[in-house]
Length: 524
Image (cartoon, rainbow, N blue to C red):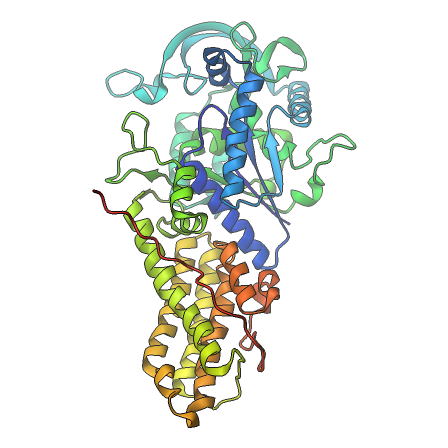
């Protein structure tokens, strides 16, 4: 079982392009793993508790329940529009999740992993955490990333994070591939050195925060939002689920010798996932072999490299974008123009250029040649019995090499590189067309067999690329499967791909443009 999750989205705002990228990226990975032949479970959802949610709801004059229900609807509607096909949905207000959190808190307390103490210090309202001296800048100030800072003196419950940091340091140093890309592990190890000996405050007193999961053994406190939210990865996977809870079998989804993959943004690697979550799992008794792999993606910045922010007015709304350019163009751009793990600058002109060049022009042209010329020159009947030339064999070799490069890249979560591999074969096929010129050969009836052989190579390439591009553009695959009169294309796996996917004598349907060009309106 390949268990794949995204970070759950905090319901205190609207979904932006970063949210959309993370969901589309994870959806592409899930679809690819199914194409690879794996059994996959993809979990995503929303984080609904916390002080910021409570404060925003109060400002709007609504209950937190009503507020998060509305915002949750915005997220789930967008994922449906972007064709994000998840298997499990997590909401942290779900009673099944609350029961799991309380069970874990009780167990950790019984094991001596929790204790209560008073603390006085500075508190970041934005990040919902107490700050340390290490959080000050070189001038001794807390930076703007912390937002409003207040001074609190209060009693809280603490998790003995410090009991597990030596283990975590050794685990990270001796385990390859646990953080992707690898350079993020160095950042995590450096941060771990700075956090040594510090325990984690995991409660908030009800006198200032009521919107959270109440402690099972102390009704005066609710659970810190990060401790609560991280547990979604196991609570909705069936961990400690009660009978009849309608959740997966945890032992199957997260077995003792398997690592799930958590897809997260770089901003929540440190300390939440890279420190808190690993240590929490270790305290719960999870083995080293069960620790999740963290796939840490970068950010989409504004044009010019500026961080997207409301104050700069450069926030990109993925809902508006999909309405303007179409879902397929958005899905393609989001995983094509960024290297997984790195940042990229969002550029509408590049979105249009990549779609028009690689899809409308290159692949669209190949589809047209395969389908339209076959209808015109062979009555839509494919034949693969002609004598093969070096050019024909080179097409077959190109496809084999492209599939191998595609699979190697996709196995490493490098979607952009995988698409480059497919594009190389498409370009090769179009160059093959320019060299062989079937439209010229068809003028002589004696060349009918040669023309059919060339067109077969076009159609076979389109069929196999339609399968390979399905994780990114599932709608396109369905369209091409219909036009090729081969519905099985939508259910094939990598193991099913072989030259001769389209049998000799197969009749294809009428072509329809799979990639209509995007035309930007000129400014008046």
